[in-house]
Length: 438
Image (cartoon, rainbow, N blue to C red; front, side, top):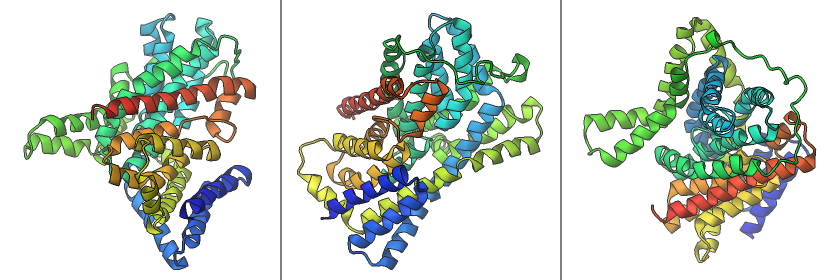
């Protein structure tokens, strides 16, 4: 019965969001109330559980996502994203253009939300395709594969960061393992897969055929652009290496681990970006702060949806559902990593949102980590992979791609949906291989 209630709750979540177009945060709160009360909790206790879940998840994420949004906006508005793109294209040449856009998507995608990265980089993709005479899908899909993977796999993006917090996974290790898994997933789903789509004719969305781009002198240098965009990754990676190789109780290790803490890494990166991409470019502090402020406004609803998912997770725990599911799955011979991936995939297909799918699945499979001895970091990546599976008409990313590339639904399914599914399958394969060595 507890499992049936969870299934009904997820179906209700799907109906409220997909069919009735209810706001995701409100839908999560209503479903949390339904699950808690039908599981036998006192109504007041359900409300307390919702409050606790929201507080637990946002206490950590407000800092990460707020600072991450500021960094992404500074990278975009300063022209650093455009500089990275144009320089890589110049270096790689027409023959290797796909690898240039893959690297661009990866570098820019790490500090930037998917939808922001998409809107910023797509006009540059249109420009590159027009200048080289190459098919639009051939140029664009590899970049979007990179953006999608960073969105689904890697901190400091909302879903993987929140899932890592749920499992108490180490952010640095999650990022390190995630990059290892991400590389082959991007290569297969991006450059290799796009070469099979020669029959799909895409055209740029009207109004983007001649995008306005910054002049060379208006953009920051290549080195400072790449350094600033990747600084959070550098700091977290150094901290992870320090944890592994430096002796305990040394001053150097303490400093490196402190600076590599996700919150500190993002704070340091934003402070650096304020100077390198703002003040050093001739902008005054008021202008830079206006940019940072506008960035935070854009993530309000993301934070609320994540808060709603945190509420449902806490209700599943407090009502005993998580323990029940853990007990049911305890004797299963299927790998917890595969189970987590499958559950996330089902929710992703039903609900559409990768973030919602990942966070909802995390609450359901939490007992698997506690009882099975599986790596928390790999569970984050397994769930992240499942959250990207089978994107279709209930996913906003599907429509972004369709409309910007002027494709039919059939061609969008043949290109975008298969690309996302390839990323999800490759992610699971990578996690299972990595699990043999960790």
